[in-house]
Length: 172
Image (cartoon, rainbow, N blue to C red):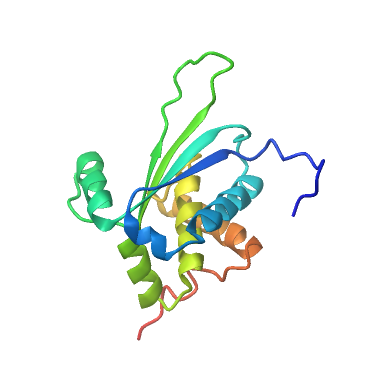
């Protein structure tokens, strides 16, 4: 918690959360969860994100399905999509855009319930995952996936969230 007169770290990006689907109103803490997760990721990840901007859109499965179809050619909903911003030459006083993240409520809720995880833990993981994509991480190759997952674990641990990959090999 910051006291009056304590400067805000300039290493943190400005994050705007846009709620575009009514289903998110059942999760009144979602915006705070996302801000906390992205700030933790920005503090731990080795990337220059100070004063950069990003947007997180909280949508539903129909909205993310449309995005997934239009941008990736995959006609089905998913939990999170990231859209890193192109970095055109901009005036020095223009804000630097990191990009956009979209998170679907129904898929996120179903995954959290199926994996018996608190919703806010899973939402935090998706926000961190999306943010790491915006700053250049991916999981296309095994080594890259391992590096990204290791960083996710570290960030989530700082938030008091258990390893989301711990039960990956579990058979029920």
